[in-house]
Image (cartoon, rainbow, N blue to C red; front, side):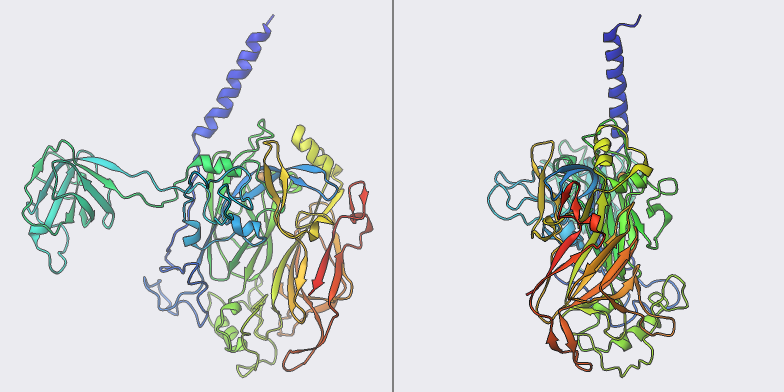
Length: 634
Ligand SMILES: [Cu+2]
C-alpha cells in the first residue's frame, strides 16, 4: 500500500518540475526598431505620418540606403496573453481567456487603438515613490494623484551593460586600423586590450574608467575592432578609439580599469512589471490595433499565463484574420507557425498592404480561445489620408496604381480597388482639409469625419464557467446568452469611459475599455467599422432614422472591376463570424451634389443601433439589454 504522504510528495515533485522547467527556458522581450531598410529614418510621433506624394522608390534593382522619398512609418504594440474577468450588463462577472494591453495603456483606456510610434513605445516607465505601475493599470490616476499618461512598453528597461576588465591600454603604439578623420593623427589612437573577447562593435559607445587610467577615462566611440596587438591576447580581444589628448603613457596589467557599454534600449524588459500589470488584466474585446498603409508593424505577444487555470500550459498566438502575411511564421496557426509559451514573448512582424477593417484572434484551439474572449479588431487606414489637403484624389490613386508596390486594381485577385469609372486627373474632388477616407477611392466617396470601431460579439456563460473550473463543454453545446458590442451589453454600451471589474486579486482592472456609443456632430459623417467576432451566431444590426451607407465589405472597397461603386444604403446588416463591414452614418439627409455641403440635417437627438434578433436583446435571463447602443447627433 502506498502511503498518502508519499503520493502528495511525489505529486508536489511533479508539480515543481512541471512548472519550473518550461519557464526557465523562456524570457520576456520586446522589439521596436527606430529604423529598418524600408524606413531608414522612421518618423516619430511628433513628426506624424509623412505625406503621400509618390512611390517610395522608383528604381528596379535593390533598395538604396537613403531613398529619396519614404512612405509610412514604423508602429509597435505589446499585448499580454492571459486571463481576466469582465462585467456584463446584468452585473454578472465572467471569466475569460484574454489579451490585455502591455503598451499604449493610456490610449486603450481612452477607447483608442494602443498602437505606438517607436519613440512612444521605447520609453521606459520611471517609477517614483509616488508614481508606479500597479496591478490593474491603467488607472484613472496614479498614486501621486496625477493622471495616468504612460503609453510605452510595460517592463521596458535599459539593457544590462557589458563590462570587461582592461589588460592593456596604450596610445599611438599600434597602427590605426581605420581611416583617420580630419584633424586626428595616429598619436590620438588608443588601443584597448581586454581580458576577454571584446563585445563591442564599430560605432558602439564605450565607457573607459579606472584609477590607473586617468587621461584615458571617458565615453568614446569604438572606431575599429579586431586589432592585432603586441600582447598575449588575440585580435578579437582589442578595439581602438580616438582620444583628443596626446601623450598618454601605456598602462599594462591595469588593476582597476574597465570598458563598459552605455545602457540603452534594446528590448530588454523587467519581467516583474509585466507580471504586475499583465496578470488578470485581460480585455474584451482584445486590444485594438490601427496602422496605416506602408507601415511596418511590430507586435509583441507576451504570454503571462492563466493564473486561474494553473493546470493549463496554454500557448497563445496572434492570427490576423483575412490578412496577407509577411511570413507564415506570423500566421499564428500553431501547427504551421510559432506559438508563444507561458513566460515568453514573440514579436510578430506585419506589413500594412491594403486598407480595411480586419480582425485578429488567438489560433490555439480557436473555438475555445475565441469563445473565451481572445478576439479583437484591427484596421488599416488608406494612403489617401496622407495625400496633402487640396491635392487631387484621382491623381493620387493613379500614382499608387503606377507603382507595383502599391498597385491594387482588379488585375490582382486579392486586391480590387480600381480607379473610379469616368474619372480624370481633372476630377474636382480633392483631399479634404479635415476628416479621412475608408479606402483609396480616388473620388472621395468613402469620406468620414469621425470613426468608431464596433465589434459584435457574444458568449455562452456556461462555457466560461466550465472554462474556469475544469475543461470546456463540447463545442457543439455552445449557446450564447450574452450579446455584446465592444465587449459590453446594453446599457453598458453607452457608458463613456472604460469599464472595470474586480478580479480574483481584489484589484479593479480595466476589463472593457471601449464604449460603443456613437457621437456625431450635427452635419458630420461617422464611419462605423463593424466586425463580427462571434463563433456561434449570426448577428443583425439595424439603424432607425439614420440610413446605413455600406462602402466596404471584408476589408474591400465596394466597387466593380469597371470602376463603378457598388456601395448601398440599408437599414440593417447581417454578418457571420469573421466578416466585417464599413458603414458610414451621415447626420445629414440631403447634401448638395456638387459641394457636398449639408442642406437638410437629420434632427438632433438619440437614435438606436440594435439587433433585430430579439432574443439577442437580453443579458442572459434578464430582458431589455444585449446588443444595442445609441447614436447621438449632437
Ligand atoms: Cu490563446
